[in-house]
Length: 133
Image (tube, rainbow, N blue to C red; front, side, top):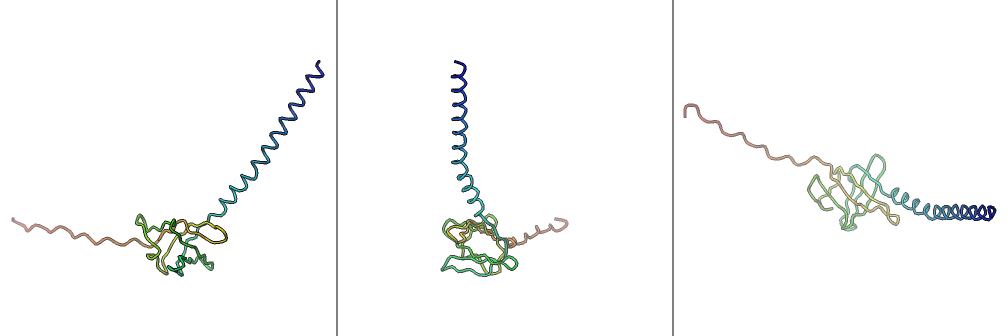
C-alpha cells in the first residue's frame, strides 16, 4: 500500500514539473517579442537638413549621422504646447524626433521643435502721473 502511494505521489510530481516546463517554453517567445518591439523605438536630436513635403519625409543630422523619417497622419509635431504641421518645419531647425522602425523604414511618432520660443512683445510701463495733480 505504501509503495502504491509513493508511486502515485512521484508520478504527480513528475507531471507537475512537466507542466511547468511546457508553460515556461511557451512564455519565453512572447517575452522575446516584447523586447524586440521595445528595441525598435528610437530618438534623434539634431538639425533638420531636408524637408520633403511631397514624400512626407524629414532628415535630421546629428554629428556625422543623418536619419530620414517618414511623417504620417499620426505623427505629432509640436513647438512647446503649439501643434504644428510638416510645413512649419524648416531646414536648420533644431528638433527631437521619436520614431520607430517599421518594415525597414523610420516612421516618426513625434517631432518636437526645439527652437527658442517667439518672444512676447515688451509691455509698456504705465505712464507716470504729473506731480501736483
